[in-house]
Amino acid sequence: MFRLASPLSVKLGIALGFVHLLSVLMIVWYLLATDVDAQWQLIWVPLLLVDFPVSLVVVFSNELLSGLTSPWASYPASEFHGFVVPAIVHGLLGSLWWLFLPVAVSSAWTAIHAKWRNGN
Image (cartoon, rainbow, N blue to C red; front, side):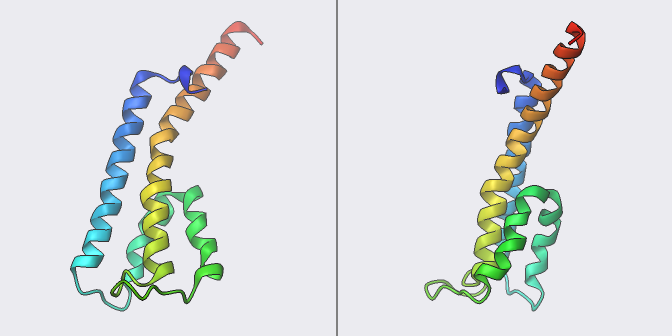
């Protein structure tokens, strides 16, 4: 399916995935480098919207993982559901989502356009 994608969509996907990964890394760095306030988990809300289908993992993991902490890390990194899960989901899955989204749309558009052009 991805062989139908345009080279521009591949470059766009790489750029979007990279920018997304950098954004998540900046958020993680900010949370680890500064003193967090009582509402520090709200920093993930914009990414919940941007990464919508992927962010459902974060939303539904609340029931399963609430209350888990890791003894080896300091606060806020010790908060499994508030820090570790969003960092992994948005950092890996969200970045992959933005990497493949333009390629998938371009491939689908090319296939639909070719089918329409051939009259099928």
